[in-house]
Amino acid sequence: MKIKQLAALAVASSCLSLPVFAGHYVPGIEGVKASSVPPPGVYYKGYYVNYDVDDNANVTVNALAHRLIWVTPQEFLGGDLTLEAILPMVNEKVKAGGVTVKSESGLGDLYLGGVIGWHGKQWDAVGGMGYWAETGDKDKVGQGHDGIMLTFGGTYKLNQVGDITLSGLGRYEINGDKNGGVTVEDNLTFEWGLGKSYGTLDVGVIGYITREMSGSNKEERNALGLSLGKFWPSLMLGADIAGYKEYSYENFAGDGRVIRASLTKVF
Image 1 (cartoon, rainbow, N blue to C red):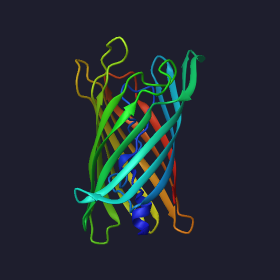
Image 2: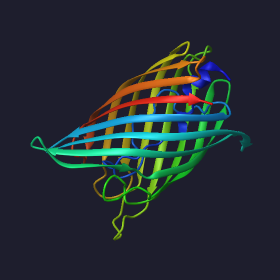
Image 3: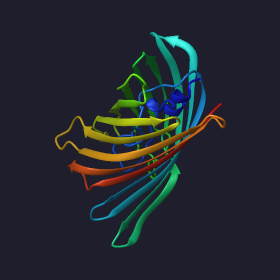
Image 4: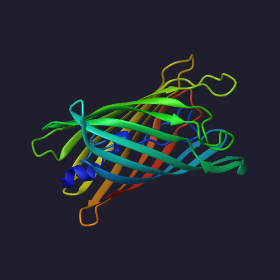
């Protein structure tokens, strides 16, 4: 198992649901080497995400997501078959005029899915799909609808050594309707990362764009950020931290900020 592959750790299929978004997937979860699936094995990844946005009110969402990944030894369509499950725990708080008008906590919607990871000499690629089940409390932190999510992307090594990479990861959400026939628009998210490795340390410039693909008032947001990741081979443990700032948006309440941290354990 190569150390550099472990440092990437299959974040290709990670997802997290937060109630401040219409769709389930939260942009800004991945970045450097986002489309590189690791060698066969079992992985646990815990995510902490803080999303904060100010307009007439301040909305703050904190989430802790537990993700179990199994990169199977089975090849399918020439790639590594990977299965995963994610269960988020979410707290949402809304303040207006300095007064808390809403504070809810609970389990979010469950995600079950799979991807196939392909590997070349200078590149990695990923493709797959999964299902967001309407299991969370829709009156608190659940989205109130289910949905299908398609995943696609690639990582390219920009030099022969392979320590400089450019990655892109796309998510297309086909959202189900809420109760009462309320339509939730389809959503496209694309995350990218330009990274440099220094042994088991990864640093990168990262960003995302997210856009509604249907409806008359299409919401769109663009963000830019930085990330830092480290893997300890003796412990088979990895950690990552990143921050994003949304610098432009359309048909959205205000510009948001994302802070995320993750911890990965290889079994």
